[in-house]
Image 1 (cartoon, rainbow, N blue to C red):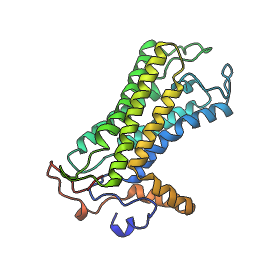
Image 2: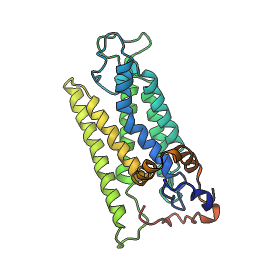
Image 3: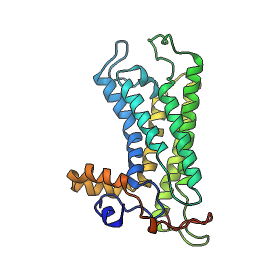
Image 4: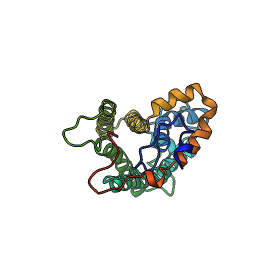
Length: 267
């Protein structure tokens, strides 16, 4: 999409010349994580299952596979996987890492969705469920959250600013958020492991980890100016979002990649 068309989506900040995805793409990934815990809890509350208290949080986010929000659980993770599979990152020396991390995270999300955790009490395990299925689920969840940490701590803070040059102030601010979110996810994983060892619920550490993940991607996608703009112009959101997802730098705008640095500054 050329510059003229890209200017028609003022709510989404312009992508850098070497951006192979878009800020809208990153925001969608972020909003999926942001809304997942609350959405599962709400749907399960309005669609109660016999044996489960309608509005009592289950022991884990994954346990909602056995609630009235099973379709939402599988659908949200599948959507997340598809957005991750299609995420290309930036046309610079970190491009391969972006792609590998996104593909690994997408595969892990599918493992979590289609290899469920064991049924929560008082339900018996389904006849098709087995311990290996639960093990695959746990491995998938660990890989998924680990890739979120990798993005926060090692990919999102990257910058093309030359050594010795100060980072732009807004980039310093964003990097602080990325690192905070990455450490937050790591802390939640440790919290969850500790809780499992004590036989306690892990819904809260999982939910907080998803929120940290969401915030990091929303900040990477410049969600704050987008939210402000469409708060004032809500009727333009759907049209502009589709247009922004389709936006790509013109071929003559994309920088040549030498393998050592990118043309973008301070992203």
